[in-house]
Length: 253
View 1 (cartoon, rainbow, N blue to C red):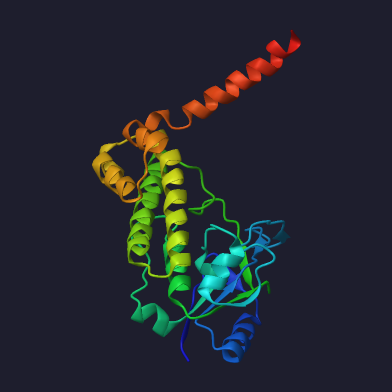
View 2 (cartoon, rainbow, N blue to C red):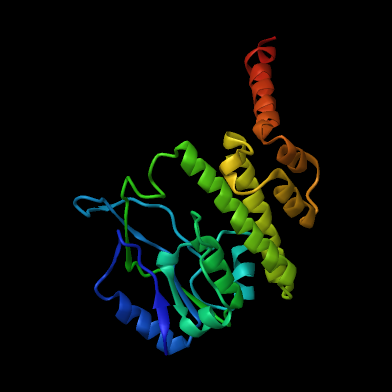
């Protein structure tokens, strides 16, 4: 029985973490074990601090098939965080599940594909992973122009992975999930792209993105914003501004 456990260089596990994982893995013979809740630590004193993020909603706990898990989520929710992940080695290697190189958020596609390919998954709320909130880390540091370009490129590459899975997936529940994952990544990509535009060092072109959108049958506002990314969000800001004007001025009449 061979499993792979991931750990970031800034983080650490509770002393009993591997023993806890071993008991679940042997009792349920699962392909994937995910720990939904992290312990957040201050980077100098390692004091525990408040941290309200978790991988899955609180009602998601115990043994699931991939289909049951997606249905329990009630739609789309991002499956991520390699630190929460314990996976059977054979599942990962036989399905050629790899991290997308040279991007940020590389664990999103990795964890999602692992869950979709496994026969069963166990979700635990036991807090065994200590996440250190290092200010200079990729996730917590200031977003420079170069980092924004990398973020935009990362969402594009994740979109390509999800598009491939969407086309290949036979399970209708998982296929719908991948479709929603694609739409979510398109939204995040456009939100980031509006800040940098189609600069030369972006790593993909307008033509590449239009091709991706056509595979999802995306038209209308999103398609238009792909052509002119700098205006993304402008219509919504205008609606909010007009609504605020109506409330503050016309409402007084």
